[in-house]
Length: 496
Image 1 (cartoon, rainbow, N blue to C red):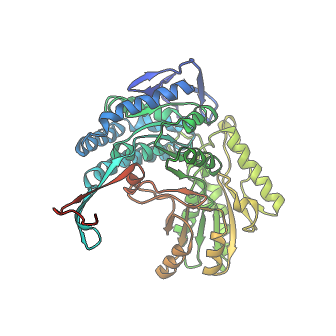
Image 2 (cartoon, rainbow, N blue to C red; image 1 turned 90 degrees about the horizontal axis):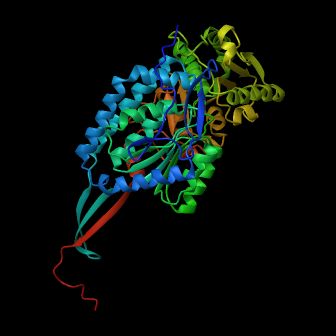
């Protein structure tokens, strides 16, 4: 399939409603991870550029904070409509820049549009509160509880779901009445910069500011800037520490969606066909570059051998191919660096005593030799204490671990520093609820995996993060709560 070029040769940042280059003119080049071809260049924002963006956001906030819920709802709906009208183009740009299959990119774009629509609904349904407080201690009072936008926020999103993570961040910002300076990964900036062209005519200048650059430079400028009222970050736990520290030094809140080592638990009474599919969905979706990936596959001992045998055959049938081809089921990893990391963990696993049941190596068949492709991989004979079972690999590599009973499965599932997600596969509803409640994770699926529609909270326990996204409760994270307490008594207190 010949790829039709739908992206620009170069992009600019969106600051204060204008498309601008970096103040020093420096740029970064973006290459397609599937074939190494140059896609486009985009600015590397300087410290001065970040400062300009923050100032533009605060200027916009002066009037934006007073915009009605109805107007914000209208803006959110217009953004969703614009995304829908350009979904084919956006999906292809996402696929070329990230390496994920076009069928997945299309799903991400549609989910992103729905996220704006969901928060458009939230805007009109969120209400302030008023109540009469009348008791001997405080007298007769009217208590009014108001939610006000927190101000200008700094947001940093990762390279694994560039467009969808942008929607997760931008939709609640607009809904809450805040302004933002948002930075995508330098690996995958193009889909957000393309979205900027759609947003610019819809959103008032300065409400959404998009700066691009490396995490070590532009990202650090965001973390160091003194004028943010909140930080929001999605990415690795290692970087999450830095974001949390930066927020703490400024005494501002931070929401963090970080790493995971999620347990995908299969009991002997599972629906077999759904279970095999669910194991694949848990670790092969987006080439395993998913924070909530089901990278630890726990299988009950009486079905372990049969399950592994069938899963190996299923992995062999997965079509790894050029991501823009519609029959491709798994595309390329995002970079050489990421591919090397994945391969190094396979070697670590083998040294620890794990065996490679399938895959375990780079895929260099035909045209794939030009890209960063990995074969779907299963490590068996894994002990839950091994590094490959405890550390986030972030690739299509799953560790298969045997368990005896519910208690055994829950104990091993929770024996990790992470707590982002997990899944339970069984036909026994009581068991499903028991195990789901026993797992220390923010999202637990039952008889499915990686289903993340708007309206269902997403976020982690332990070192997987702070806060929840994809649900209206995130509005509270972008808000200040004010209580206006009015005395309805005519008489003085009488204390003096």
